[in-house]
Image (cartoon, rainbow, N blue to C red; front, side, top):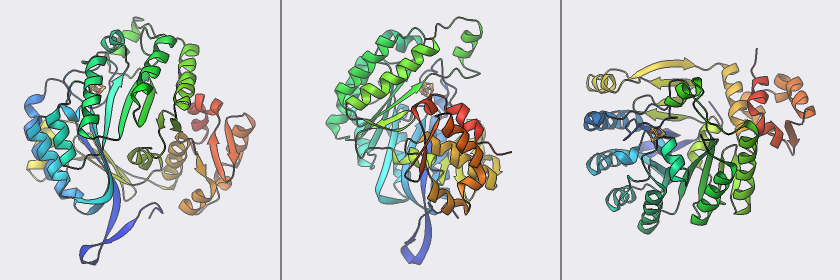
Length: 390
Ligand code: SF4
């Protein structure tokens, strides 16, 4: 049992495990050109049946746990109509939810209105994660987003008016035709709106996306590596100057607004993922649900398993995952906690690797913690590859 797993005595003296819950909504209005997430445009006809099946999976698997956070992601959860949103949120509210539950819904600009926001509020959603990516309409168009910046602002202010006090804005840099100045302007523009949380990811060209094909044909004009590095360094500087503290490689928040749900992933705590393509980590097993929406609906209706891949973690997997995920967090890894969790001293496992990376200026040891230096963050893939156990 992991030490971060909390058991709470619940009604009737039954001990229940506390977990985070991820719900996947695989529908989008249009596929963005860079996106390799399991999300589909043009499958709206399946939404009603999907939500019905998903609710069955939620009630069946979710009832045995205490839920400390919920993240409805996708896809575009805010693309659901009011009826389906009502049904989904009402099913989730039947679970054993913690009083201080963090409940996030991912939303795309242009899909929010007073009606769906009121439904979310009614069903205890207390955090919105808005996928903006850029404040520049030409860039939004280049990457295949369906919205413009004006629509984002309208939705953002409406959400504030309806009472959402915890909003994340997703931004991307390293995009085609994006200049360093444009990126700085996007950041400056967003901080004026004062969201509680900002995620800033650099574009990764993933196989199977439109951008991958264009890249292969040399038709994508991407910023140089130096420019991208500069964009990242401006991100840290501008956000820090405006009261956002960096707590993960790509995540920044105002005091007290770090995302509990994502931290559960980075700390390798247990979570349950429900819906098509969703992943879980529970009872030492990594489980992934099937990808095909029709097959998912069929199997749920036939009371068959929708689990596709199951991997039982051994100690080596656990340690490697703990290191890779832990180094994503700016606070890094606690030497004592490693010992507590794995019943081993970290230096027994990684003495040479730790010393090498400290000597190269990529890792820092301070007050019982090991964390990546600024240079280490830039070369994080290189550092992490050193922590693969043979
Ligand atoms: S809205 Fe999000 S999930 Fe949908 S295609 Fe775009 S990036 Fe992918």
